[in-house]
Structures are given as structure tokens and as C-alpha cells.
Length: 202
Image (cartoon, rainbow, N blue to C red):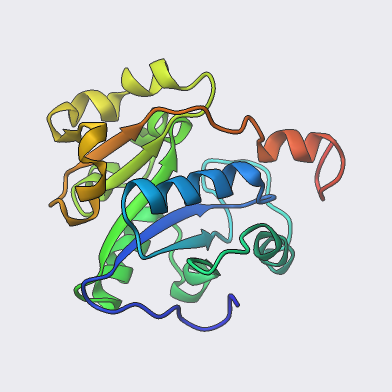
């Protein structure tokens, strides 16, 4: 499922959900399914990263994380990928630039939880990300106010689409972002690791 390059043709709207998926859980799937519905996406690709530059602890082995993610992401419109490892990219801005070059005419949308919007200004070339692809941001419990007050949200306040215009996000020229405020699963990879049911937990 995750081997080889995923297929996409010009004119399709593809959501990109990046992360270490250490491990993948129902919260990732909730964001994915809501993104497909709200933003009228044809597919969502999970980009399982080799590692997160902002996290000091290394993740579980890539093959293990991908295998577990595939168990969670059992949906015909969801594809688990090792794209970042294949591209050799370390930062999101690099990954997006390479994907746009490899898949001309595809409308990519970067998907993330509101907790990532809070720290987006710490990401390498974060403005380049915002100005290259539209972004769909999903509120998780406790992150809503902080996300709306974040540096990225303030800088790009004028590029925010109202929720009723969400279905047009994929076709909107960047910068454009939409904040979807809804009850989400409180599941987190950190909590799962702490339970001791995943390598590196406890």
C-alpha cells in the first residue's frame, strides 16, 4: 500500500497530512475524513516522516510506523506513504516544493491540527509553506484559542477563508487557510506511547 509513488492526475485535490505517526491513531483518521468531506478532497496522503526535527526523541522504526498507520487508515481515499524518505527531504517546505514539481496540476492542501498552527512559525521556511499551498487547520480540544492567536494566524489573518467557504479551499490560490472548529478526538500519540503499548513509551 505504501510502496511506490501514489497516483494523482492534474485537477485532483490531494490533502497532505504529515507527521511522525508515532503511532497513528483515531485522531489522525478523524482529521482525514473531515478534510475529505469539508474540503472536497479526492484523496489524502499520510506522509510518514523519517523524523520530526522539532522532537528530540527519535520515533519508532519507519516500517513499524507505516504498518501500524495502514491498519488505522483503512479507507479507499487514504494512502499511507513514505514520500519524505523517498524524496530525502527533512522539512515540510522542501517536501511540498518537490511534490508540486513531481505532480504538476495537482491541487495540494496541507492538513494539520491546530496545535501545529500554534508552533508553525518555528518550522523551517514556514512562510514558504503558507504561500505555496492552501492549508486546512483542525481544532483539537484545548488548542482553539491558542491557534487563533498564533503568530501564523495573525500574519496571515487576511488569507483565512470562512468555514462556509471550506469546499473551495483546494482551488484557492495560496496563501489561503481554513480553520475547522469542531469536537475532535482527544487521542494523542504522546498518550499512547505513555501507556507503554508502543516502542519508546513510558
